[in-house]
Image (tube, rainbow, N blue to C red; front, top):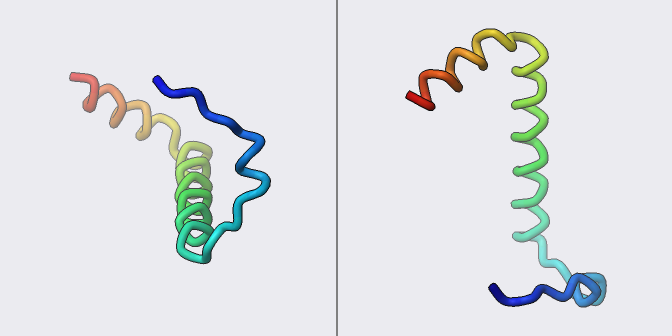
Length: 52
């Protein structure tokens, strides 16, 4: 695996497409957290089905 230099990311310019994708990921993660809080038993059942 190649090493990753995190210090260079501070210097990079981010275009609107990349920022839009990051925002979409954050939004979907928030939906998942909300679902987990509202119906944890259903989520556990879905996880068990996926594992089988």
